[in-house]
Image 1 (cartoon, rainbow, N blue to C red):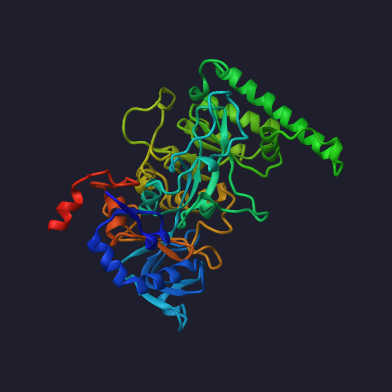
Image 2: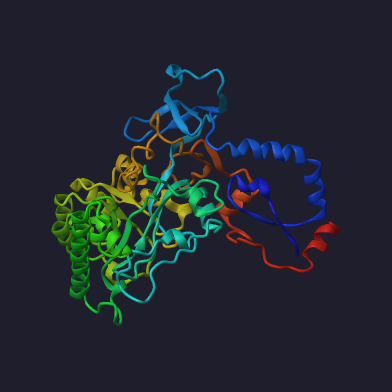
Length: 461
C-alpha cells in the first residue's frame, strides 16, 4: 500500500496515513486552503492573541480563579485574572471555556520516550554520550505525552550505568528533528543534565562494578579526574599549547562540578540515597534524586542537604527488589520535611497519559493539593532550571497550558487540549489525537501495517 506524507500534520507533529485516490482528489481541490493554513501554522509563535474566558484557572503559586481570563500573545502569557477585572484585547480571539479548568503545561522530569539509547556495554561511566543523538521525534510516545497534558520533558538515557549519558530538555513543539524540540541555553547549546544511577541496575559483570562500594569508588575516582582536568584547563588560559587533550567525558563532568549541568540521579534504597548525598557534599555538584522509593526513611537528611526529589508512585505489584519499600506517602513526607518535590512518569513505567493521576495518588496518601499541583509543574521546572520560563500561568512566561474537562485530580477528568508556546498541539476532538489519547487499532504505530488489499475494500465502500 502506497503511503503519502501529510504535510499539514507536520505543523502539529509527524503523522503517516494511507494513500487513497479518493482522498487525493479532495486534497487537490482544497490545495489552496491547505497551503494557506500551512503558511499560517508555520508562523510559530507569531503575535496572534487569544483570550480564554470563563474557565477555572490554576495559576500555581497564587490562588485559583473560579471564573477567569487567560490572555496569550504569540508564544507568551500576556495576562491572567478574574473575568470582571481582566481586560481582553480588542484584537484577541475570544475562546469560551466556561466549565473547564486551565493549568500550566505539565513538566515531566524523567521520561524515556522517543526510542532512546545512550551508553553501551563498554564501561560503567559514559558521560560523553548524548541521548539527543538517539531520539526519534516521530515516535508515537510524543503524541501520548501531549494527550496527557505534558509540554516539557527531561528525556533520559537508561539507568544501567553509573552514568549513562547526557539528558535533553525538550518542549513538545511540532518537530522535524530533535533540534526543533530542544530547549536552548543562552549560548545556543542544548539544555540538559547528566543521568547517573546507583543500586542494583549498574551492578553486573566487569567492567561494571559488582558491589555498591565499588560503584561509589568508581564515581569518586572519575570526579577526581574531572576536577584535575578542569584545573589544567583553567591554568592553560588562552594558551592552546598548554591545554590537555580534549576529553569529552571529563568535559561533561567538569560542567557538573562547575554547577552548569544538573545531575539527575536514579536511586531507590535509603543507603543508596545517602551515598549520593555524600558524593554531593564531597564534590559540590547539584543533584536531583529520582525515584527515591525509600526517601521517606531519610527525609530529614535529604532536606538538610537541600536536595530536591523527583518521585514516582507505582500502584501495581512487581518491579525490582530495591523498590519493595516504596510507599504512596513519599511525596507527602518529603513535602512536609521541606524538600522540593516533583513527580515523574519514567514512561513506560507510568504512561505519560496518566501523569495527573500520579499526583492524585499523592494527595490520596496525604500530600496537600497545593504541593501536588506544584509537583506536576513549577517544582519540575525548578529542577530543570526552567522556572523562569515555565511551570506557572504567569505573564511573561511561555504560553504552555492544558485545558481540562474538570478538576485535575478527578478520575473523570480528561485532557481536552494541550497548548505549547501559544499553539494548540493536542485536541481531543481531533480523531487522530483521540486515537493516541484513548488507544485502539493503530494507536502508537508510526506506520500502519502493510495490508495489501485494504485499499480495495475502502474503495468499494
